[in-house]
Amino acid sequence: MDSPFETLGIDPDADEDELVDAYRRRVKSAHPDHGGSAEEFQAVRTAYEAIRAGYEPGDELEPVETDSRRPADEGTSRNGQHDAGAARNGRTENGTGGASSGAGPDSEPEAERRGARVEFLDYDVLTERGWSLTDDDLFEKAAESGLDGDAYGEVFVEPRTNLLKAAEDAGHSWPFACRGGACANCAVAVVEGDVKMPSNHILSEEMLEQGVRLSCISLPVTDDLKVVYNIEHLPGLDELRLPPQHARKMSTGD
Image (cartoon, rainbow, N blue to C red; front, side, top):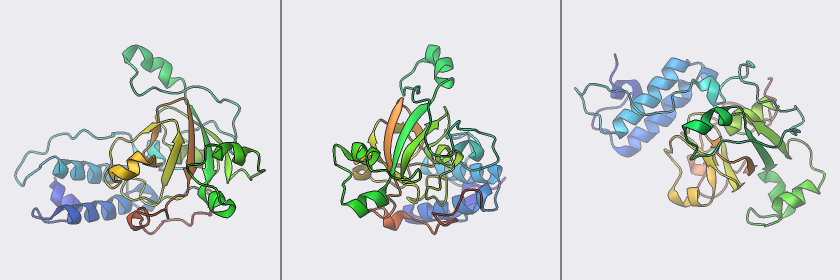
C-alpha cells in the first residue's frame, strides 16, 4: 500500500504549502467527476488527513477520522442515486425539517427522516442591483424582485446531503471545481441558519466568521437556511480558486 506521501506525490520533508498544493491538485484529479474513482478520492483525503495528524515514514497507517461517505453522497454524481426531492424550478413546498448539530442518539432517527429548506440568492444579483450581503432585508428584496429560478429560489436538502448536491439535484448550476473542500469555487455565504463542514483546509478564521462556507462539503444543521452562492470572486477567495471543471452556467445535464 502506498504511503500518504506517495499518494499525494510529495516528499516526506515537504512543507505545509507543498502539502496543501498537492492535496488540492490530487483531490480534483481523483474525483469520479474528473476521471478518478471513489476509492482514489477517499485515499487522497485519508492521506492528507494522516500527514496533517503527524504521520511519519515507517509509521503504520491507522484509520483517520474523516467524512467516510462516498463522493456520490457529497454531491459528486448526477445519476439519480440521491434525490433531493426538490422541483426543477428551484422551489419546494416542503419547507420544514432539519438536523440539529447537537442532537443525541434518541433524535437521530427523526433527523434522518427530515431535511432543511434553503433559500438561495445569486451574488451576481447583488452586484447588479447594488445590494450588500449585510443588508437586513436582502432576501425580502429578492423575493419581491421577480428574479428567475436560478438567481433566487429554494431547495430542499435531504439529511446527509450537501448544499451543492441539493442545488444540482434541483436543476441548478452552482460553481464548483474539486468537490473535496480544497478550493473556494463553490463557496457560499451563510446569511441565516448554520451548516457544518467535516473539515476545513483553506478558509481562514476571518472568512468563517463572515459566514463563508464550502457548499460541496457543507451539511445543514438548522431547519432553514439563507445562503448567497457564486461568491467565489470576493476578496480573499479568488486566490483559493481552481480552474473549474465545468462552466458555471452550463446545464447540469450537459
